[in-house]
Image (tube, rainbow, N blue to C red; front, side, top):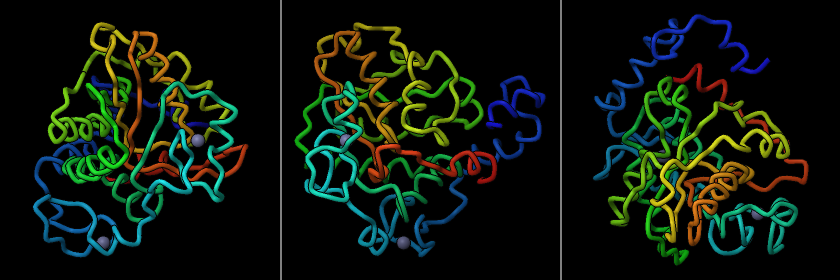
Length: 280
Ligand SMILES: [Zn+2]
Ligand SMILES: [Zn+2]
């Protein structure tokens, strides 16, 4: 049974938060504001000396798998095990975005960092991620007019207390001096968590869940969609599809991490659901 099925049987509070989760949610919100951790590396817990409050130490950055120009899919940007031009997913599915690129493979220290931002309430990590995205944006020669983040449903956002993609997009917008379009792209329906679904199920699961409520914000613009992780590209593909329906001139995507391309079946298992409940 999925977590969503489970949660329907548990009594929820006024903001859709399960009563037993309230102290956890409150703690996550406070941690993001109070900076309770001290300046330590999210990968190895070593003390950090940096102008940014938290992130990864030089050693963890060095040992993380950085994505460059070779051995990645020319469209979705994921790491490939061979020198093929495109991954099988992109060959078989026409994702609506022009291209997507990421900074790191979703494993090791960068993955821990995302967990801490996403499920551990450490909002300040968005600034560290945005610094890496600026480098990737410039290295890849992106030239966009505005930034938009992948929205969460109202229910999920209330439960987590924030949308990590939005935090990253805000920080990136300030650094690149590109306007952030917020509130114009919305998630209109709660879908199942993508974490335990196959590629085909992910595509069906995201179909029709996003909508543009202010199309003029996107008309004739070159849009950069920002998210924390790309897995199969189904979510970014669907977001791009609705942006093109609003007459966007182009849609490109940038994420901090992406999973390695694994196999045509892409039955990717992720422990995100466990973390959403357990990690604070
Ligand atoms: Zn480290
Ligand atoms: Zn691809």
